[in-house]
Length: 395
Image 1 (cartoon, rainbow, N blue to C red):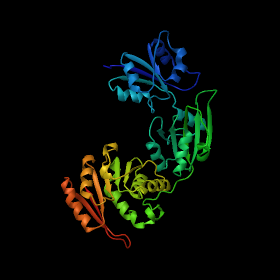
Image 2 (image 1 turned 135 degrees about the horizontal axis):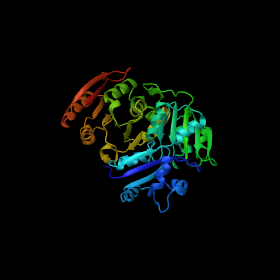
Image 3 (image 1 turned 180 degrees about the horizontal axis):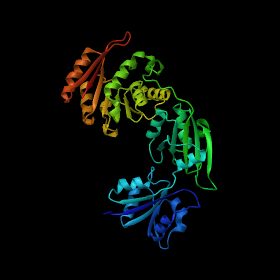
Image 4 (image 1 turned 45 degrees about the vertical axis):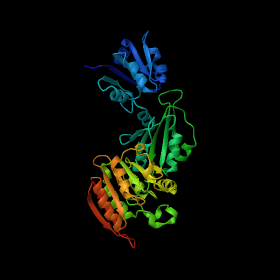
């Protein structure tokens, strides 16, 4: 038995809205309606006399408190209510409710229709009130066709500026504005640079078409990184870095902490190979922030979070808990650092440590046992004329 029944009707921005006979009957018999302010303006003439209207505005908690007073509600939403839409929100907030959906084309489908683009292979992401993460990951993966839902902050110009900053000028951008509105609809094509210097009317959406593949080798060459004071010994060498990432087993992880990130090479390689991974880079040297930024731009890996300062003094609850931790530096305080990491590491998490001396190797074995973990893998590597590196995995 449903506690509440929601009829969620998808509409476009067209002033000439067409409703099927089934939906017309549903509206004529309805008593409580809801939607955005723009939706209200579009459908007001169809509502029966005496209808109750509830605006969907933030915070949504207030909207759902108003919904609680009614058994059946008709909601108007944009496009397909199950495509980054309001039906998903109702399912999440009111899992015991019943939902009936009456969709129309979403805006990205409409833009593809205008451009006569087959869109079965399009990767679609939403930046409407959402962070950059999914968009950044799609760029790093090099999606051939990318559909993007925008908002009034993450506009086409802001999106193009982010792409340009990280070297993703290998796309043509198509922007659809007020799609479905006979008077105001507009579809335009841009280069990345043209879009970042243009203005757009809302609502709008974008389709990005890749013009060429961006070079992204597996195993980034350390000679192409910006280095700390030009010191080649201050970067994790490529063979060591790749073995480290292999032992971190990042394919099954969600959050990586890179402690002692320095140039950011481990963070950047991890993000390059696993773009959906959340990466937090900790570095006490103030130069670390600019190094990470410059190298992230160089290798096109947006989204890595830099945290400056002494790791031992940071409020770790401010960051997402890791299920993978790489310790590239410990400032002579390895026992204390391992205890702090153990307090936040998620169940089943892994720690990988690169030891450059016999002393630190023995200390890691001793201290990792003190926090109830054990070394499960150990590999020794020698790169060129550099000192041997012991790579240790603890679980």
